[in-house]
Image 1 (cartoon, rainbow, N blue to C red):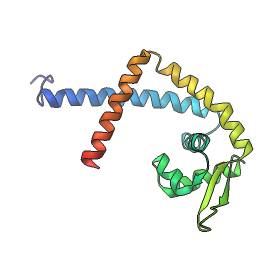
Image 2: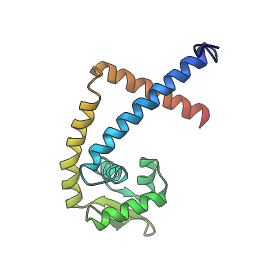
Image 3: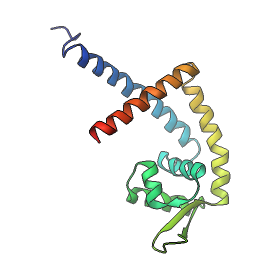
Length: 153
């Protein structure tokens, strides 16, 4: 039996698209991770710095939701970045049980130094696609992600 049209036309198209998406993501993720490692931080640490650098101070719970990871994992990452002097935790002004995480001046300086370099690297990695193709791909991926979240939760 031929592998072409093995599961029906729609399923074959969906499976081929999935394989291409996974392979492209794996390669882009590897390149991104290598770039991030060159700054002396992990991908998770970079993610925390990026969220706080772009969105400002927030609680650990908010940070975990923005990063799509558990609070426990976020706490460990924040602990390590705090030891390095990049972050600090302060009491929430309205709820003493909650700690607000924010960049220190050292963390802000580091973020402002590395993020433009990472943005340039990512721009180079995807430059094989013209800008309108990048926009279209982004729109298609958003459409797919939102539809899947709505349909399957």
